[in-house]
Image (cartoon, rainbow, N blue to C red; front, side, top):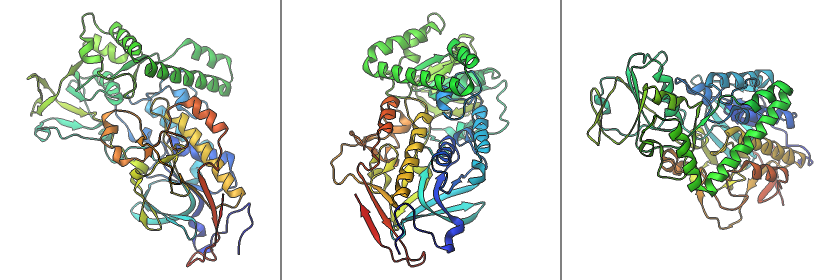
Length: 512
């Protein structure tokens, strides 16, 4: 019997206990934000958050290396609905994790969250319009069913970072550490430390380690653009003092978002000018006569790769003090006592930190399938930045690469909630993005030339060059699109009404 439009079909009692309208995978900043928006906008819907780790926080619970902090300003990185209480522009990793946990607990999201629950696979059954989600919880398999799956798993592999094949690494007599698996209680005091890499992780580690180490060397193959950001500024201080928390947070969020968008556009539209500005700013913070062009003048244009920031120029302060050194060269081999470079020079080391980047991974490594047929993710185009062509009732939260992750993640959470409300109000049990054989030019979904991106593009879906199949890195334009979004654009809706869960006889009713 068909249910009338305005509600979803009832679910059979045999799976009722493990059924939710929405399953949110991941309890990091994306997953918690998704749960909040679903509660706020569609409180009648049931949901559960499945998190593989023992507590909330995602990235901010995973990374424990010294100095871990946000590399975007915290007011745009924080949730728009939960004001950040501090007045510094960058925040420490532990403080961010505590903020996420507080948001979970204060909004009752913890009551819907299943920790230590690793999702391994999800299969769509077109006869019932339901996802079956396989998990392992403390070694015990468990299966969930849901109408919609929201993947808030980030875009890198939590199991381990990228470790290149470095000749002789096994011969090193000291300790080798990857930042993604930082050992608790690692003592670097009085030791010679070499950090391999020049990205956000490396430039965070170097000044933090330099405070206690005998020496710290940042060994890079090529330079990175690095901008110094003050930890506090007068506008932030005055705004926090004069306005109520909610208004102050909103004002600072918009101010900083506009600054990010503006600076990015300047860099992309006038790269030669931007290069000169970065070089001049960097030179002013380094010792007189320092070889800026070798160590801090990249060969690529600003924002071809992600721009890194340092709070109050702490990396440059460590270099000026002599506590840290930058070496630009390639590794010939690792020896028992350190690193021999292609130039013939040797760097002695007691500890080597391989800050060599992430391994990209779509959907947390979860295997998606449709009626048992595996979805080849890299063959799919992304729809409106958060769904996949021809894959029903699944969304993926991925943030900006040129601005704070949360700016995009929150828009995605709201877009998914609106879609679910639209579906339920009309009795639709499926929503399938469909380009209807429209020819699209493919480009990377993560539009950066960084090594960790280029070596893993086959792990991610594709972006087109025209909407709604393009992934755009522009917060302002995305906000405008979100306000006037047409939920039916390039979308096929339908409804199925199973007579029973076991052996259903489905009736499909498609609507335009």
